[in-house]
Length: 77
Image 1 (cartoon, one colour):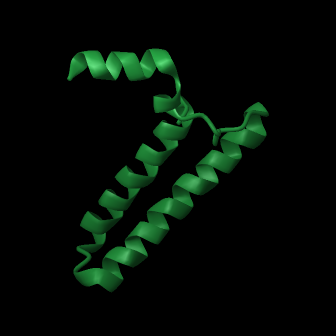
Image 2: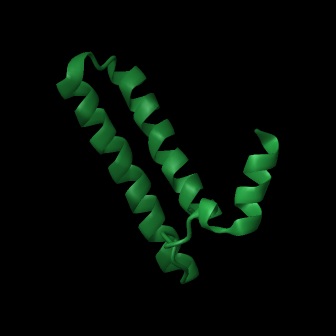
Image 3: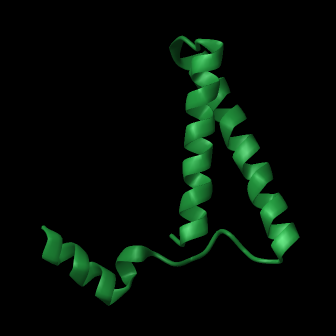
């Protein structure tokens, strides 16, 4: 996952959390609705960024596929 991909994922999570708090969502259905809402807003932001800057946010990269990153993680544990 590339940096921007991670950032937009985090944006969706944070927006979902804020929508859940604002609407005081209770139960599965209400929380599902706020998750969809947060994801849609982050999705629109991603599409807008891709159009504005002419870049792709979503990539096929996987952090763990890179040998140097896997080695760094192994050294930390």
